Length: 297
Image (cartoon, rainbow, N blue to C red; front, side):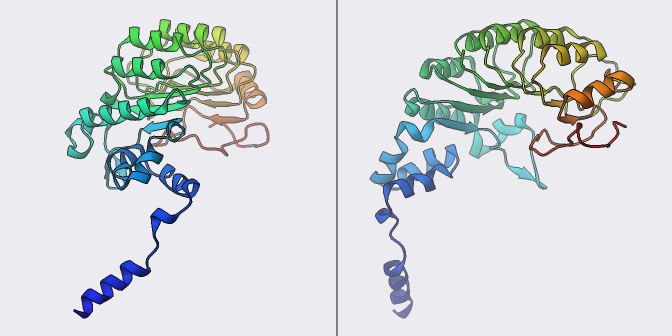
């Protein structure tokens, strides 16, 4: 009986979340992830349900970093379909719900792994005309045709991440033609430095496309790219506003002599081909090559 009274006392004296001002409640809910909002918070009460239906709640949709942690690290994105709490079908359904609720206010969306499909991409571009940031990581199940059709309808796009996703040359050409405001491009293909003895064909095709069609770039991350010094020089010439460049794992780039000097003079934040990290994070600050005496080797 006493225990019952104590419990009742706690419930009575505790905060009443329903009495919080609507803007405070909205701020709290925005700190949750998409999955938590759709599967849990929106079902708590009618007030929270109405807040969660507000299109302004969905101007940013982040469906990345949903994988479970193993020994402090996320498992491979390709393991997602084997995790009962994060099935492909459930995540795609949640994403579609969020896109529908955005009501044309969607500006930023990130999707990972097999959650991304051609039909889902169509839903994205059909829901908004002013998407500014698109992140498609490890999305091997989407077609090249769908990617090209998507960028054709995103003239205001400023940031694009297609890391570990198909990256055909003609897709990059479409980006250059259709997204004139693009300032940030991430198209990583490897997380590690590729040993010299591993056979990889050198190719500057994609580097030349970037140099010729993306003059507004400020941020470029191309880990594991097979460009050579010629491709790097073309990017430096064609992207005069570039201040961040990530070349980790690029086996055919030899930063020495005049090229080293050029990079120091033009690039403010530089990741070197020989840098080794197990993350693709690029948070500032990084090595400022224009004010540091740190060598490239």
